[in-house]
Image (cartoon, helix red, strand yellow):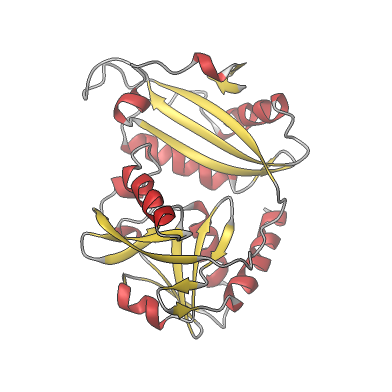
Length: 280
């Protein structure tokens, strides 16, 4: 069951060949973690979605406020029996069908789906997590590359590459050969007490968890934070590398090529992240 424009219905009755999200990737989505009906970092998700819709020139309905969408997400959670556990919610917004590359309308529809998650809080995994660079294709840094759209061919092909090579993930590069992000999240590197992450101008996703970590790190006096380009050479010199997204929270990388990494800073940050989650 899914929520389609406010109606709970079977998910096999929605998609057709003229759906612009399917035909042209003319869609945006937000992946939201919920805990016992609470939408984590909902305000940040909402404002990112609104900004992204404006960039793609989608018509934002008058009723598309925070309260309306939150109630629709909760309606979906209730229909799927997920109000008393943690869940992964996907909110997709797409331009209504009509036209070819040039749409006939900028009006939109939305779909909300939810699936259960095993953990209520963010946990640091102690499992091996090896990554390498994905160099078959490059991200072109622009405002569009920072949006969470349905155009994810690089991420799909990169994920297949990672599986074929026995990797847990890959780090992507932009056309300037700088490290941008992972296939499913933002990247941070740690050297001593210095923490560094690529700037949005390098083409990385404007991640919600990235924003939470930036806010947390800025309030810790023993760490210095830098948003600037990361070269592949810096990965070998780092003490720690970790990835972030809203579902996992923080995922430490244990190995990149021949270099193995610690997770001391990751563990310290995830404790503060869980505090922020409870208070937010």
